[in-house]
Structure formats: structure tokens, C-alpha cells
Image 1 (tube, rainbow, N blue to C red):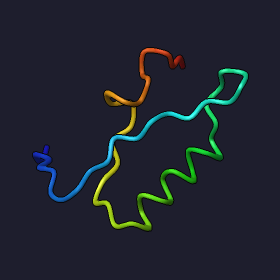
Image 2: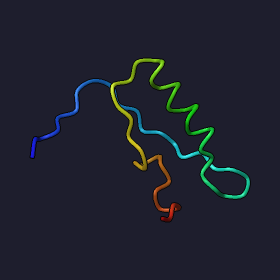
Image 3: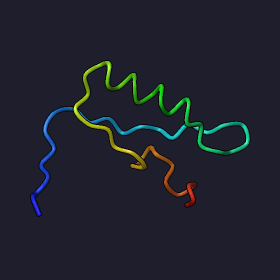
Length: 57
């Protein structure tokens, strides 16, 4: 397996939720598009700002 070495700017995204407590996928798409359009090299999901403890499968 190749070792991954991050290079450049990575953004830790928040996880947007609807008023019903579900992941707001439309808002998430807008956040991702914003990051891509502004030149980030990578996106980190469910990191320290991703509310991973509140998500279920």
C-alpha cells in the first residue's frame, strides 16, 4: 500500500443538519463545491468539526 502524504490545503468540513436532525446533503454539497471552487487540495470529513459522534450508519 502506498503511503499517503497530504500536500497543500485541506479543509475540515462541518456536517450540516436539517431541522429534523438529518444530514442536509444539499447544504453539504454547497460546502464541498465552495471548497473546490476556492482551490482547496483536500477535504476532511467527520474530523474534529464533523460531528462524527452524532452520526450513525
